[in-house]
Image 1 (cartoon, rainbow, N blue to C red):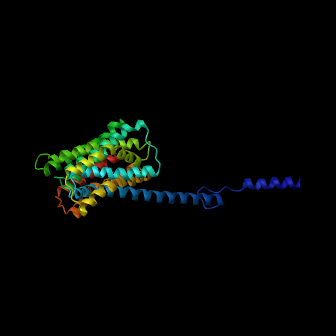
Image 2: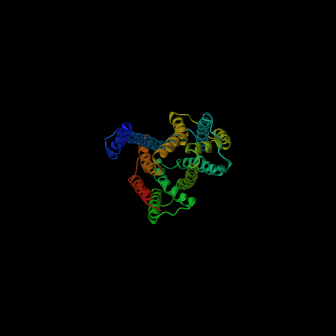
Image 3: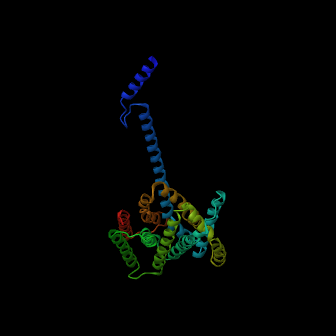
Length: 331
């Protein structure tokens, strides 16, 4: 009886003990929960900070593409520069895929990878390189600043989404600003370089759209990696043919430009970009990419000594505002 009474008393005391207020510092369980929440918050903050840094590095890598291409054209012909850069990037990507023992993509993804290869690996580099023979990098940067808008438009058509009227108004305003800039800079008519740049916008946007769709089922770096590798049967003979028919003059600028567009722009830049985008999300990463055209304008002055007209930064800023509006508009 005594033992039973003690047990009942102990039970009564245990029940009558007030429970700690959730989130308070009292009680060991609450303290452990608070510490766990703090640790999770710190871990999330560190992951977000690292993701932002990686995405920003990707934007910097992409912003250097046009100046590096201009350097590469000092020693290579346009066809040689494009084909050799693709071969070098494919060797790097293929090495990574081989070392990590990544299985080849399923056959159902081959058509999508072909679109990525045609737009990102071949089309965009070739058309922009041909344009940069006669166009300044500043001019090209402003025109290609429409790429996020063009990608959004093709993505809406491909995915069947219906953006809002605000989105379409901002997209059309950005396109009008770039067209007005190109016509004004070209003396009232579009040049061959402008046509190359607008073509590059379309093929690259198609490649980005299809690559974004494929990135839902495989890591983004593998999408560009397999696209590069699949192009080797085309790019290797193209490189051999171009090097045999176009004069090559190896200089510090031409070699540095080639290495950057191959390793930095074509592969490593995309690796850190996709890693950062996965960590912080597409919307936040897209906000960072808004600075890319303006960064290219800075590089064109610092690395190439180009002189900017007032219209270039003003148009780039106008396009930036239009893209920011499309990012916030809800369809």
